[in-house]
Image (tube, rainbow, N blue to C red):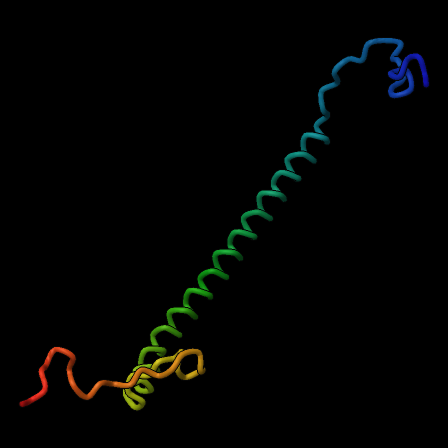
Length: 105
């Protein structure tokens, strides 16, 4: 173990370091980089909104055509129980007599 652990991490500086303002070239490079990042972000958002618009249009198109197809299938079969169709539960049989009526005497 070293007696002074900080001596190995960073060398000591003999004289103070002064702030040097960025040159015109560095300022221009920073501005160009910011412009590139901004344009990339704008393009990404445009693509994202376009993709969302395409998805919404497809959903609306499919839902507009879906009720016509399902209503014709449902009317031809009558009311069916999907759970009974796949065998999960027994089919409900329609009762011939209403439960509230009394048998004739």
